[in-house]
Image (cartoon, rainbow, N blue to C red):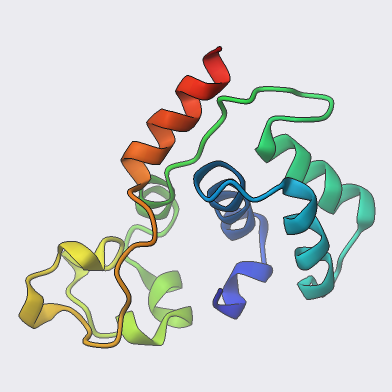
Length: 132
């Protein structure tokens, strides 16, 4: 995890969602780790946000998912945020800043890892699980 994910709601919520919905990590583990990383950590806010994203707690929607690529394209159109915090992507072409694995091999940063999960497949699976 790059340090940028601990500095704001717009980055935290898609990250929280990815951890709980796509990787299957219990929201309480994420809340514990984030609380140690947040500069302005507030117990109620931190736990409440993790519960909300995980689909537990007061506003239960177990099929709520964020597509991190869609979120990035929506809120960081030009990739400035990504380029600021992900050194490997500072010089990547604009068309691939949010999906570097789709770039032609010659244009991909050599040290950038492949995706851990297929976001589209995991999002669909998470929504289906919540619809039961």
